[in-house]
Image: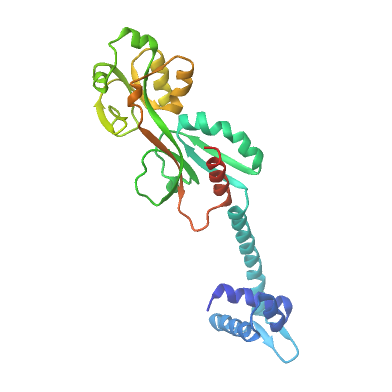
Length: 292
């Protein structure tokens, strides 16, 4: 016996004082309603209803049981409705984690427009370069900039970005020219610590690819700080174009080995696989896909 269904049937019979009216409300046959109530009485080893040809009355035990169970069923219905609303409406809180510089330069400028469109949805955005566990930490959505490993996460492409070597004009004027990838080995380089091989720089020139083992003069866990350091003439760096663009546009940095800058990295929107994807996640995914 489905105990929860039996409880709902019993409460409906009490409220309508009728098996037939309860059956209509629940879209069941009268025989099914009667069988479920009898099963409930059998499991409790007590009579809950008195039946005769004219009317149905509730026993003392049945009244006590109804008074205890009816509020619980009502609260369950309210909880179901709230959970359904979280899945089907744009309310509640959307938790995102986004790489710091990508979020600051590309995501955050879009947030006012998103909030104007969805004012009732609260956003909780973590800007961080750490690799977070979406499921364990309760994130709904993440942006990842990497070649994704196989996982249970759903991934949608968000964009491709060129990896550039760059240095300040002043640095290049005072040091030996960089004409080939091998020349990088003789320069102080600024490396990013949050990757597995910070001092290995993969470069691509059409069909030709190479990896250069560079000497790290400064290692940081933030791409924008590396770009600032390079603009202060500390060495050569290797970072995505969305980080370097403001410095290149301002003339603080210039590209090095431009013919070897055809390697791309992918940005992905990732989220846990779910049978029912909440509307709030669907809204943000659709919004970002439409702007990249």
